[in-house]
Structure formats: structure tokens, C-alpha cells
Image 1 (cartoon, rainbow, N blue to C red):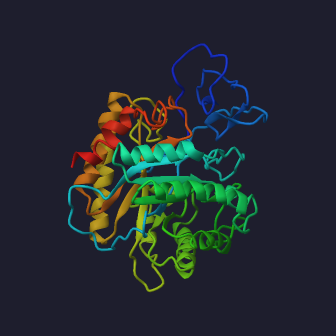
Image 2 (cartoon, rainbow, N blue to C red; image 1 turned 90 degrees about the vertical axis):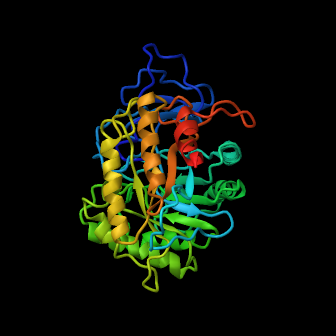
Image 3 (tube, rainbow, N blue to C red; image 1 turned 120 degrees about the vertical axis):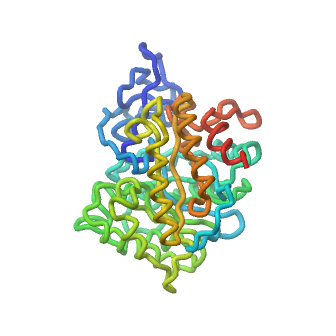
Length: 422
């Protein structure tokens, strides 16, 4: 989710309940509810703005909220979102650098399945509070495909989780096996696209990738060269880079990862390219810098821009109400023009809102715009399903149980509703 969107708006209520439920919110910006968890769970700060009940008896630590805000053209994230690794069910999804005529319907629509990204902060630190979605994630994906006719899932994960906190190390066999199982659930669900999202905000423990003192481009390329050996996946290189010193230096870092992936043999897999400050591509120079990135043969096929957008007043995805979609659509219109001029495409991997009518209107309007401009926009994934509580402000977690799920209104009316309208 967007780095300012990690904030989860507190559910209304004055008196704290005795205990928050498993995976329920237990702290964060303006939180007034329960701060203790049911037996077998403890309250862990997922970031500066949101704390959640996770398994285990660790010490509770509900973090106070900080106040980063993202501009309207930036993408927004929520308590943990993913950037962009895409997987296709049988073979990697192919795109072209030459935008085709709009069909009035995007190719891909779905949701994020959060859990393996829990505990990742916007400075790239990890509390280790990862939660394996397990069969819950599997059941949700099966439901979204079968009942909602969605076809895309984004699976965010912390870099530290994949390598057991060993920067530059190999994939940890135990931890990666759990993540790989969730990806297998995605592939087996019948989804057309599964996105592997490295959810580190361009950082490892506070240090920017490719900068002095931070992970080297070679270390970043190493993790991607290892992941590239996994078939049928597309690669979301990094969730929501922000406050980068030099966008051209960042483009060099991204090029190193693209080159490593292609050299590893993943020559056709979709790769999602993230810009600076939640993917405000045109105005901050990201588009121009990332447009120079190429495959080994100099082509730009299957290199897709990754964008995020929320519709509340500060574009953070942290409020219960949303503002008029006109300003947000203006941003998408500007990007669409740039994409057409440069024969490129983008995908919206984080968007969403509460079930308030203002958000239903705003989010549906944006998604309808993407449908109309499907020559340059491939689709969207909403934030977020997976291991969030159903009362989280951006929750797309269905209520009920497997076999009898009921969707959140934001899913039934917008995420799935707009996609299935044509």
C-alpha cells in the first residue's frame, strides 16, 4: 500500500472491547478500540500507523501513527500492499510496448492477498510479524475467481522474509516454501495473473537500494535472479519507492533487476516497473527515467509501469470517506496520454476505499475510466484481502466462511462489479 496509506482509519467506537479478535486491529493512528488480543495472539505494530493481533505470545507494541501524506497523483498503499510480481496461470502474461486499440475492458482485475508483508514498515524495516495466509488465502482466491470472475492476485512479501534477514543471501528454503505454496494456490485458482510483490519501499532496514550504505544493485539483482527461476510468475520489483534522491540512479537499480531476471531465463514474464513516491510517473520524472529500461535485446515488451491510487482527501487510503474522483481521473488521463505517446502500458496494483457511498462512487469511477482506456491500462488489484480483519477501513476480505462468503461492497460494486460490467 501507499506509504501514507499504511494508516488504517480507526473503526468508530469509544469504549475499547475486552480483546481484539485474531488478526484484528489493536492500535494505530487514532485507534480507540481494544489494545489487547484474544488468547494465543499479541498486538504487533505492522508500521507506524497500524497494529494487528498476530499469532504468538510476543510483547505487545501498538505503534503511534506518523503523518506522511502522498500527493493526488501518487499511488496509495495501505497497511501493507504489494508492488508488482505477476504470475500467469499457464504461461507468463504477454504485453506489448505498442498499445492496442481499447476494447472497453481491461485484461486483469483482482485483489491483493496480504499477510507475508505484515510487519514491513515504510523505511524497509521488518518486525517479523509475517502471517502466512495459508488455506485462508487459498479459499479467498478460489472464491474471487469462481464467484466474482476475478482473475488477478497480488501477493506482497517482505524481502527479509524471503532470505531470513540475510541481505544478499539465498532464498530461505523454509520461508520461501510457505510463500511459494501461496503462489501455487494462486496459480491453481484459475487466475490469469499472479503478482509477486517485493514490499520494501526501495529499502532494507532504512537504507535505500543502490545508495551509499544501502543494499547494492547486485544484491537487489540477486534476489530477483533467484525468484526468476520460478515459472509462470510476473515480477513486481518493488512496492512504493519513496523519497529517492535520484530517479535516474533508481532507474539504474531497476535495470539491474530486469537484466538479472532476463538472464535467469525468464525472458517473457511480465515485470512491473515502480517509480518514485508512490508512482507519480509523469510529474516527478519517473516516466522518463523508467522509459529507458529495456530487455536484453533492447526491446520493452512485458515491461509495465506499476501505479497506485486512493481516493480519500489526501490520497492515503486511510479515511472512511472519499472525495470527488475528478482530480484522480485527471491524473490517470495525463498518464494515459503519456503512455499512448510512448507506446507503453501500466497496471494499477493498489486502489480501494471503504464501503461508504462516497468511496464506492469514486473508486468505481476510476475503474470505469481504466476500462474505457484499456489500450494503455491493463487492469487493477484492490487493496486488500488476505489476513486483514473484515472491519479494516480498506478491507476487501469477504465475510463468512469458505463456500458461503459475502463480499465487501467495494468488491461487489467496484473491484469485481466494474470488471464484469462488460
